[in-house]
Image (cartoon, rainbow over all chains, first blue to last red; front, side):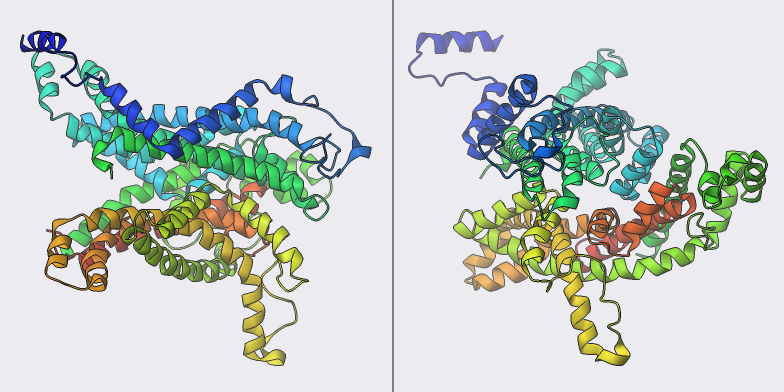
Length: 300
Length: 328
């Protein structure tokens, strides 16, 4: 009852009272103060718009060949040159951005869904056999080198662009589950959890309505940072020749085919690699910015 | 401490069992067994169903999966990883031939990574928001975002191709240069030459994460009260930084080092493939492509054991670095 009264007071004297802000506004303000994070977010926005507009922007259709035109130096007609089959590198990169930029979100979405669920259940029932079992499974996956696990599953299962994304997601949830679990372990003892438990809330309500929203910060941060690693994982797989299968195009796959022509056409290698680099560094900037914005204690 | 260690080692057992189950299951998900590979060498042999059946039987591939799993686990418990379908040799021999090459590269890389990352992180933290700090953090960000294989190709293109054949990009040594005729100095120089590029790539990609960790950990520690106390006592900056702060700032670095071994096995797949380095990463990748079950499973199990040992060493190192930490 005290709250509305207070509001009336500030309404009487608008010049003196500090403007009330929601938590979200504060987080937003802190994020926008971080220059690198804002630049990163802006660059990503542009790159995703390009990927969406690929059919309009790409100068050549997806499956296009013009062999007599191979290994053209960068020029006005082909700003990034042409590759071994005479295809415009920039145009292929624009098409390729659709896969390379989706990978991050699809794989991250998988990892976050599984990791949050497992971590939430393990943390909420911390100390019980179910916690023990789930965490042992997460650890067992974690002790096998991730990349080796990844190439093994990818090589064994049927290949498609989406399968690759899903497999990357499936192999990268354990770290997230551990983060979520530790959040849940501390949050389940808070007063508000106790209070709503006393009011007869079911476990699922406690987990999803009360604890999860409070654990959202660390989940969002590590999800953002994971997008970058997922993009790197796809490009590494494609570079090794076991990733996104043709005719689909991804930047890693372009790098794979550029390997044989490093001497004749280095531009086919430089640009796609630079694109991967740019996207990953932007996601890392945004992730770091989000962490600082969501955790004011970390501030300088 | 003794009791703690026994407990820790006992805790590893279920983890290892789970890891072996996982490795085994993944390989059995594959449609089409290894018999095609085994008979592929002989013309038309894969077309002969009788020979296929015979082969499956002699390799024990017709037994129920749990039986196969138990047999495999029983064998690896005594160090027998079975035979490689592809090399037609015991897996132990295949790995023993490749492992030293990987270790050679990665042990040197590890020393360089720690030797560079720790001072860089410390300098960056002590001079927070200085130009040096911005350069170091900028490079660290760049290194984390740059795909290793791209860095490798850029180096091959930009450095090796302009070196007039001085820096080789393929293999581990020049054939013919041996100890007897050339002496150890030439051999060493030759090996070093082949190592430059792969080493640069591994160090660059491993360095960056560690530098960022070291910096942020040091920044946190430097804000602590005891650092202010040390400073107000009039202690020299050097002493404060290296004696008081560094030791405490090292704890998180030690914590993440346990997983480093395992990530190096994963990372060597790419580096060794690009530079044709005959190590475990390349053998592992070839085995994956060839469906050489036993080799793949052996590498997975061995890396898991290595990681677990890494974690154990981390726990022991904790006590050594921070005497406040005591295990029951």
